[in-house]
Image (tube, rainbow, N blue to C red; front, side, top):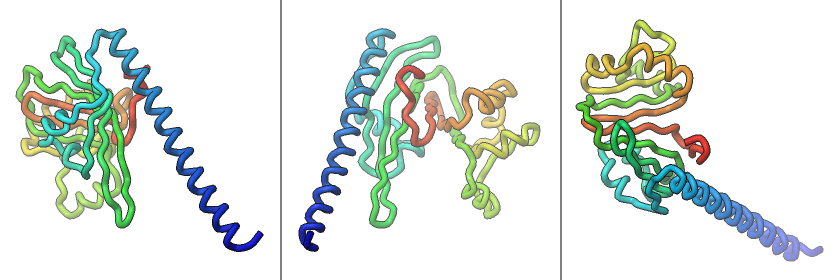
Length: 204
């Protein structure tokens, strides 16, 4: 085969690969939406395919200040013993050099608790956080629970009030069932998510 023919075939193969990736993504997205709609019907929850007001309402929280193209999809809303809750798939896009990366995570929100929470932020600690701590980046430590302190970054303007929220039982939960969960809160609202991870419908 001549050079131009090989180049053309190569371009066709790349286009077909990209089309396959897009189609696969659409199929998986459709299956996820259907599963969440079935869950909503079974549990008596309201369902909406998209409602970007949530990103606007929660704009004071760090997660909802990341990137651009912020969207809330597959929105479930309902009520529990703790009050109203929202569950939705939230995505945003960040630019890294010439590349765009879209991050998706399932977010759980209790927007109107009967509480007055201090502003707080908890997330699994990474190497950058540890380096930042050396230069004064805030991290509220729990000296009675060194393993928890080494695994999680905890921030907040009222350190004593934030510490008071983390009972031994809650700290134990973050070592077990809540491992990897990030939490943001303040006032009557608190939200939780696993960064860049969508929860499976049957695990919600």
